[in-house]
Length: 387
Image (cartoon, rainbow, N blue to C red):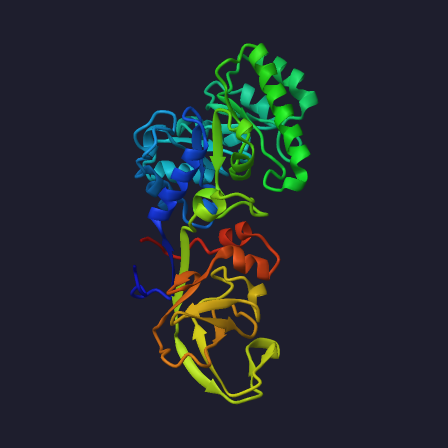
């Protein structure tokens, strides 16, 4: 493992072995002929867009899968949010199929065509602009099966098919998204969404579109609804080692391994007397003589300010409480009783040290947010290294 890196105050470690292991677990869950899309949107959920994509390209599954077998680069594909992310991957010479899951400004359709990026069309305004193009990129159609976010509604499908046929457009696939696949309280709604999507898929087939790639499931849907695996699943948070929220109640959850660790080091240690206030606005007062350590990381780096007086970090294999208000570039922790601590010691913000671990889902529960939010807010400028 890498210890404190030279000239870096904070850094992210990406465990590629864990990443590959998580992908393998999902490959064992889906049928041989179902493709796995690795969702690397939003800087790969905070893990690093390019690092994760390249690490996945090195994966050679032990199961035939990924549709064509061999390596991920031969049969896998990537899902990104924007054309900006897609273009970044192309600049890194990544030639795999890339689907832009989010909205693409119509003026950028031509650039998507030039760079062989697949766009998603979810509304008639975008479809009209798309239909005017001479050189059209490949495209998927997004269906609103009940989440009521992006996508064509069921009552719009007849008009949609008429437009697509009249313009001689040939979609590569259709996809939708569950509103709450991982919550069993909404099982009936999820089942209804599957039925709606299957019905719409059948309408496309009856209209002559026989070879569409159908995709309904992200991580939660893949775990809970095998009948919705279809032609392709889109795995995001699952490949990074976390279940969707709320956690699924099945064995896969315990098999997943978090991929990201976030580290810094002790930059200063001092002893303060009983009754001393710590940090901005006197948010914390120590009751007895205390030893505190300063960490050169803060909310600018993405360590959530709501963890003030709530968070914990790992140092010398032990937990230390975050005290006082988290600053833009500094965190104060109480290290009273950690006798061997010294300046330069490695500190784990997210990850494992010795027998102790603090993962993103634990921190998220402390501040009533999701691990998705906590991870994606980590500053993308922080150096990512593979371990």
